[in-house]
Structures are given as structure tokens and as C-alpha cells.
Image (tube, rainbow, N blue to C red):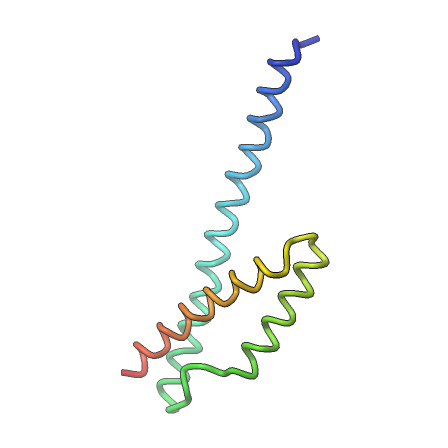
Length: 98
């Protein structure tokens, strides 16, 4: 049987490996999300639609807060995270419109 310090080091390494995999999933997921939002931005620019949709954004924030609660994640953190993403998407859409 391993000593407690060695076991703790192994557990720490396992947690860090999981964190690294999850970080990669987050980055690739965000990349995929932004591919779709860029396509939306091009459609909006082509059809002279506004870069933001406040009603949809509100629904998405409410939905994400609910999902965060279900996932045992701080809903306020989830809201801040989505607001950051939305602001980036709007910035991209505004750039495409110009």
C-alpha cells in the first residue's frame, strides 16, 4: 500500500489530468460555438439584421442559469460567463456588419 503522501500525489495528478482534458473540451466547444455564431453574424450582415437580439440573449441567460443550478455550478458565474461570450459574439457581428 502506498504511503499517504504518495497517494495524495497520485490523486492530485489524476485530478489535474481530468482538468486538462476538460479545458481542452471547453476550448474546442467554444471554437465550435463561435463557428456557428460567425455564420449567424454573416447571415445578419447579409440581411441587414441587428447584431444583437436582446430577447434571445435574455432567454439564453435564463436557460444557462437553470442549467448551472442543475450542474451544481454557481448561476452567477454562469451568467457572467455567458455575458462575456455574448459580448464577444456581438462584437464579431458588429465587425461583420461594417
